[in-house]
Length: 69
Image 1: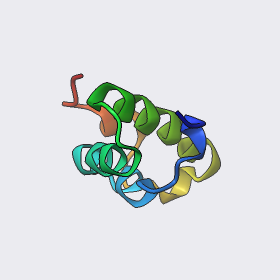
Image 2: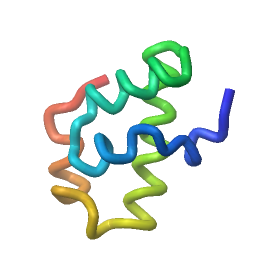
Image 3: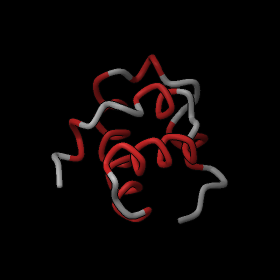
């Protein structure tokens, strides 16, 4: 499909902890399944967390709190 870590269409949603909206954006943009969109989201999250940690609105532990897939 694509190199998951380079898909930047949902960066703003990822940085602002809008997980569901980000996954929806990726799913619509890529025309893929929910599972694939989540995989792309997590891969891009990891890249952004490494490259732009100061741009996130919360820390890693808080980011994923309450999100179950």
